[in-house]
Image 1 (cartoon, rainbow, N blue to C red):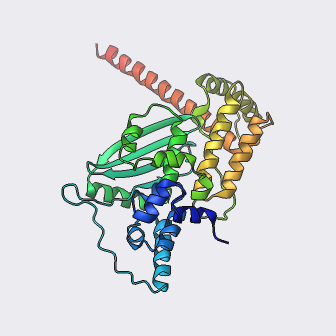
Image 2 (cartoon, rainbow, N blue to C red):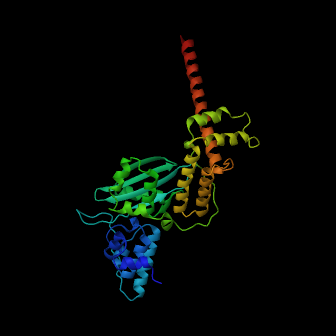
Image 3 (cartoon, helix red, strand yellow):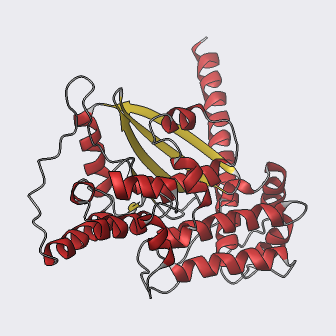
Length: 344
């Protein structure tokens, strides 16, 4: 049975952006709401030029190559693609594909999203760091050689994985959640018109990387979600013995961490982690994060939740380190004053 979505693209009654790319090669395929459908449609239409222009991400490049092979098998002659040009003179067209890279939660519970986009004025590199409802955004500009070096560096980073650009736009928009972000607005000025609107409507699961099939690995909720007053109370209640045989204090600390808006704050962060894991193709971890969010919102006992225990432990450890540094600074100050007094 023919896919009705494909028929709609072929007869120009479907998504206008996908229709424009599949028929005329207009726009950026990676930023479309369903880039794989667009590639399939271009193959059915025999749009060789559009398919040969697909350079990234890897999954779309492979899909375009397969579509070109099917075109050749129909007896249609396909000429070799011209060498890609990163930039050309004056106002001639150029093709520098936008790209997106994503990491799962790190030891602090933060996720990193890196994106690049290029127009005639140059390239912009965007970084969004988020954990729960807290987000940081940074952006910078790069020339052609700097952009290539940046890509090479990120491609060699085992923590980062390339995701479809549309998925990156969707995630960045979700993470910022309407918060003012000058860098993000500037970055979007270099993205194809309508790309963000299409990304907002997309189903993240349709743009996820291939499922890894791995078991749920350890992950951490953001320690920075604990209010300072809660951390102070946790540290004040620490027993002399905090070994693994005496973890009752940790159960008490977790109860304190979830008081007030704590449950929703951590549940919200778990939702964000679930979305990230989904896009990375880590289904077991996504299910684990979704289950954690559900338990917290249901008011259940969460003392056994490993991601939450790790967050509380890290927050307490960081506060103890901070106090130790302050204490050392005070001692140094006193010793300097004693030295000054003796010198007099």
